[in-house]
Image (cartoon, rainbow, N blue to C red; front, top):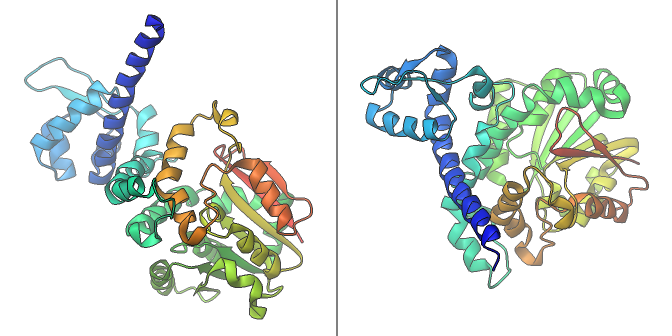
Amino acid sequence: MDPDKKDRFEKRFTDILNYGALNLAMAIGYKTGLFDVMAQENRPLSRIEIAGLANADKRYVEEWLGIMATGRVIEIVTENPVCPLYFLPQEHAVFLSKKGRSSMAVYTQEIPMLTEIALEAVVSDFSRGEGIPFSQYPRFQAFMTELSNNKFRDGLVEKFIPDVVGGELINRLESGIRVCDLGCGQGVAVRLLAKAFPESTFIGIDNHEAAIHVAREALSDDQLKNVKFVCEDAALIQDKEEYHRQFDYVFAFDAIHDQTRPLDALKGVRHMMAPGGWFSMIDIDAQSDHEGNMGHPMGPFLYTVSLMHCLPVGLQDNGAGLGMMWGRTKALELLRQAGFKDPQALEMAYDPFNVHYLCRT
């Protein structure tokens, strides 16, 4: 046994335990608004002030501040033990506040949520490999909606759409085309696009009835007339004549890797596309083998989310079980099998963790 290697791993193991605990406490700070009030005030605050501003119990806040301070998330700016003051630097706040333009704190909720609702089911399924039904994840759609709001509010219309086909897509959207969001969830992306491009018509498709119900309610609130939502299994679309060549542009955000029959879903996309149409598949940018992902900055996190949700959902009904980290090689291969002749994998400077697979008819 190499004693130095043992010591290094012991230190790393300690870091793992600390960072796992820190993530959980940061999720609490995000959900309770503690980060938001500290960011908004932008000055040193006492624990009593923070508790008052966040409408929180001061003893809970005190304990939480201990985690944030020892975790170097916030700073203690006075050493007075009777009444220390705590400060959230702006350089940290941009990642932690719900209104921060670089906010990442929404992701702190994901592992705790998946642990709570699926840990025992995943452990049990290790011996069977049968998958876990989506109904096991009752709060996941709401989380994905929050994530989508955070992700799309500044980037979808302003950055992604103008970048597709060198700006040609945005010109066509302004003139009026038919667009489908496959795997739309609760409809955040497609409603944003419908607002931005009133001359175009939009349809959101998802096989989760509860998500479609929420999307329709939100649609009623928005009073949009150029979008509708349909509950449909993507794997069955290729057999339905009413979808044949109906759309000039189809997009799927982080949806294909969750499909039990992703090849059939992609064949459905091909079936839906009108001549001269485009398909955008946006998914996690990864390699298709473990060794190729050794340098991925979010590798352990993304593999864990996949292990706890994407993989078991995709294994249902003898499904393909692609998982979130299926990677470029598998993705391009599947797109070709579905009939797309020359799919491209395009990097996005404004979203380095995802890749844009662009396909044409």
